[in-house]
Image (cartoon, rainbow over all chains, first blue to last red; front, side):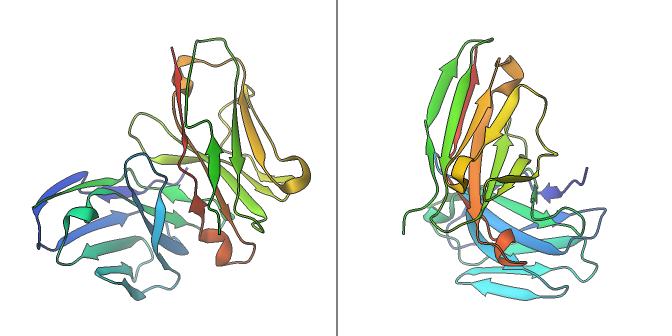
Length: 112
Length: 116
């Protein structure tokens, strides 16, 4: 099946720093999404991307749908302690219906 | 508006026993999905309902897993008999119908299943 390679696996940063994470695939995806999971909760949708090259922001978060349609990145600017959590990329490709394929997640730790 | 709810939040059972997980989607969401995350790996798709019909069950690991969505409202996922490798967090998600809306899936808090 399709696989998404998400990196880095974990990040330890200081409050106020910017952070970037990305996902790559060997296959073309039609849709990219970014989710965040807090402990004991389910993933929460942050940003959805539908067109190659699309750049979308949600507050301090910015995500882009790669031109090749095989990658996406998420940037968080001026991190704060509540940004701590696991960030997942997810994608949908042409023949997968509406089921999502997820990356393994990036565990983000923000030190005050 | 209430979100996706799941019950129970945790379940610990012995190998060979049966467990039934329940999911109540967001009201009005025809799409309902089950996913599973095992041992800190990626979240993996199990199956997809559109109302009461199974649209895609390609991710179901084997015939020990049975999902139902009678009446097109809540859904149950039964594991019988449970094996050790079934341990993990089972997520339910729901979404509206429509090309883009269907991808914007709202997740429940998950059920953590431990098989001993």
